[in-house]
Amino acid sequence: MLCEITGCETTKKEENEKKMPYNAMIGAEGILKFKDDFWNTNKISGVTYKNENWDPEDPSSEEYFQDEASPPFRTFIITEKAQMDEIFTIYPDLDFEKEMLILYIFRSSYNNICYQQKLINVILDKKNLKIQFTIIQIKPSDKNTTTPQQTSLVIKIDKLNIDTVEFNRIN
Image (spheres, helix red, strand yellow):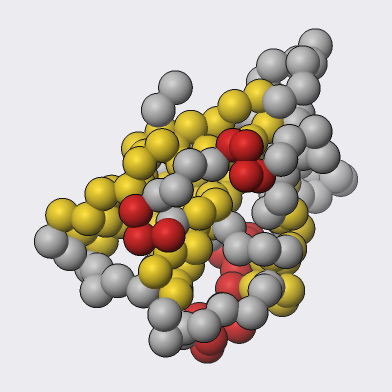
């Protein structure tokens, strides 16, 4: 999966983000490309996936399946280059002495239209980081939503000593 951090060509980053605590920002400058193995291993419940074992000759075999066994979201705190190498094939340079990434994989219905992820607030409560965000549709579309899909949100932030991250999507 290829993820362009800059968003839709109709928006300007500086117009859409206010200064966040700990220099938190959506993504990092440039493009991220997830390793297929990583992306496929970290499925999310409530999403329909292609069945890798589908047999078109077998009438009882299903081409797609609704994942109900995986967790509803996954969160990764990325503090070292070795972690980046396990997750991404393409990623921008980071200074891991001062910065880190938080990767949130979740279910969303906004994958096939032009949308923008926007940070609302970032709160540090002892060793728990709380991130509030929203998803805004940029271009009008006949299809406001799509079938739920596996989606990611990548936050670049100052290096913090944290144990957990909570994401809260504000509508």
